[in-house]
Length: 111
Length: 115
Image 1: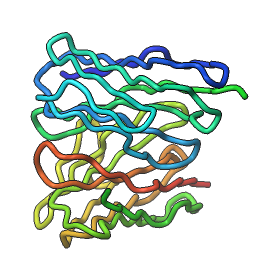
Image 2: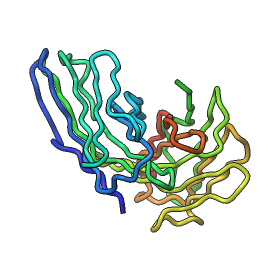
Image 3: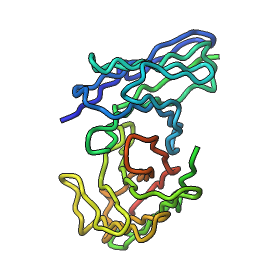
């Protein structure tokens, strides 16, 4: 059974810092991995999608990497801003096309 | 990206009544939609997979008679919480996508409060 773990559970950083969020999964047989952002009481916004054959994806200040063999992904946020404060979720799509979510990292960027 | 619209965004209902939540893909046809449930400060848990024109597939522990799912068209899936109880109060989110290794798009979620 696929399990997804995110570390840390919460993170507080001063504005301007670069930071890394971690995601690990137990079964390397995935189709893709997706990083989402969720603001309190809101739905999910897709940030980056990495196909199983890819190693990384970039969008603006965000960079996500994928090491399928070791079951790990990282989300790198450069020059963090207070507007980046949210919960970040990673999810893997398994062989049955279901998305399995991690428990999320709650990020607070202090002005 | 594709747009998924979920309605209503929040609803309060009395215990024992039923509530219907709609999930629409606005600019693409979704052969498969997924319904998730999220408790406060927890992650999303998949409830069921909704396939157009066929019965939904429910995850273990989810009561199919309580959470009725209908996927009558390629752009609309509905989740009906029947005989709602306070413990059904939660955040329900749908997602849509084409079958295969493609990106998942999510609705804005529905906050259900049963009083």
